[in-house]
Image (cartoon, rainbow, N blue to C red):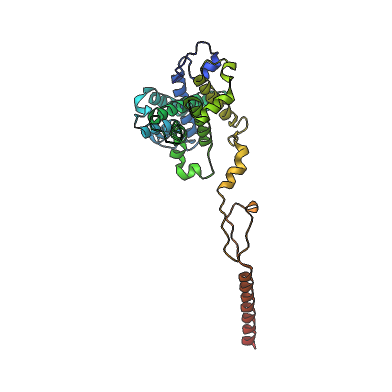
Length: 323
């Protein structure tokens, strides 16, 4: 899963971010599987009362839902069948998280150093997957772009974005994954896939040309030989730093570098009803989260007057009966 580029001059940290270290694929696969197993063990199976096969399948889907389903969208075999490492490490990780004596695997897996190591290699797996699936989509669609831009735009961005969200869709359902707004996997996928796609694939379009012009000589400044490797390292670094900061030991899961956009995005979905003729218009700036409804003043007064009349008539009627 490493980057196909000349990396002899890169320092070890860059080699790690590019997935080009010894046993990189094995480490990524194991820790991804371990993260899935620990997620289930810390959640629905925290008391070990779940049937073992149910817990195992859920652990596999928690770690490898994207790898299981995303390739099928492109008519390609899923790596869960074509790559023996994935399923083998799912079995090993599940056993460590659930069935070691004295629950030692589960206890060690929840310590801060192991959680950090798990996050680092699982995120490396996700970063390499995002790059790979962006490449797959671009190669599939590059010969048939729209007449409005030199390359296909949405396919190479949306496919790797879906890769990181199948786990949420599988575990929570469509509504459960999206009901609170755009979840972090969508934010991360759209940002990273967009950057990679235009920076690497867009050779003639104004977006890619402008992006490379803005970044200028950054690849050479950081000692990276080519733009493709630089893009992979940038994406991988971003996908390392943010999830580490989202751990409970640091800034927590609510952290996002895009939080400054929350006021804008939360206002997009507000419903504003256009007032009918004879009603008082309401400014959208003072809208609460609910829909705006207005009532004509005249109608309000008539209803109020009618209610008062009815109430007084009822009272007088009761007095007549008493008399």
